[in-house]
Length: 441
Ligand code: XLS
Ligand code: NI
Ligand code: NI
Image (cartoon, rainbow, N blue to C red; front, side, top):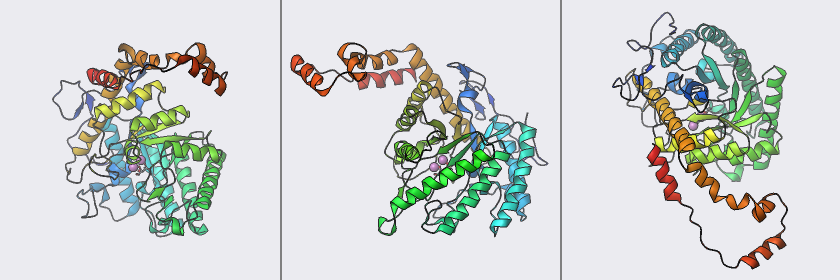
């Protein structure tokens, strides 16, 4: 059911339905069929598609060379609470029309930050109540909440890693309120993206102290949320750079090492963003695999980068090859722990029609759906799995198995090497694997 506020914001656009790949209706899903079962679950259950409040309802398209190009009708009121309510109405209308079940937010996406901390707290409480009602009316859920501790100039030297204690305390206060809002809205997870947790120059930075402060900060945030009854997961969202030159949550492996060092590995998992993976010189699937291997594959921020430049362009996913390879890892990992697929993506600055943001989300959902179908086919009815397993078959029995079980020493390896002499080369068959992927796309 499409829930409307007093006003319809996306006029002339109805509920987006699945029409199949031969449909020529641009405002219909071609591959994303929410109820269709793939590998034992509906597509809807696999993905839990979510809308990113900040891009879709707040991002007006400004860039360093010019102001925003979007004129959002919901931004017109000069009363911040009224503007926030209008934005929430637009948001819930949009999400309902997309047929998605989730959204994600930063605290000050929901309502403009006030001039004082006390005023911000009051505003956040008011809009949280309003959104609570919208959630009840529409059945739309909160995938995760987070705090924006990176935009306000006070955080220019970091939040939890700021060299000034009072700034850290302010961030703590802000995270407490964002957690309260997330809990009040039955948020299923809570995200920490360390926006300015990192440094520009080591000359003025005591990295060891900053890391310890960040560890302590996350421990206390977890303890607070648990004391308030929060049962969901905490996620770290790694990103190697931008806005800082060196960010402490560089990639999945770095974040996992950090979490284990500070004893946070049971409460925290990883939220992997495609464009952050590629900025770290990894592939999306590599990052997923690293998190899955650690038992920490929590959630995904879906988007894509640009081959020709080196920043977080946050474009909507459309690279079937990339997402198919990711879905192979995703399926084999048994999916996400608690999270979903959040479209942390924005339309281009010159995409200014109201329908463009629908087209973007349709394309993103179809990319994931098509990739999931393809990956499932590859796993269930191609030689892919067997070829991979065969590469390691020498560890399934005999000496190989003894080694894997920890029963051979270096002297044993030496003896075997002596006995064997020179070995024939064994092809890695990369091109064959690549051809299998393409054949099934
Ligand atoms: C920025 C991040 C951010 C997080 C939430 O690059 O992707 O949007 O997802 O703070
Ligand atoms: Ni993100
Ligand atoms: Ni990002």
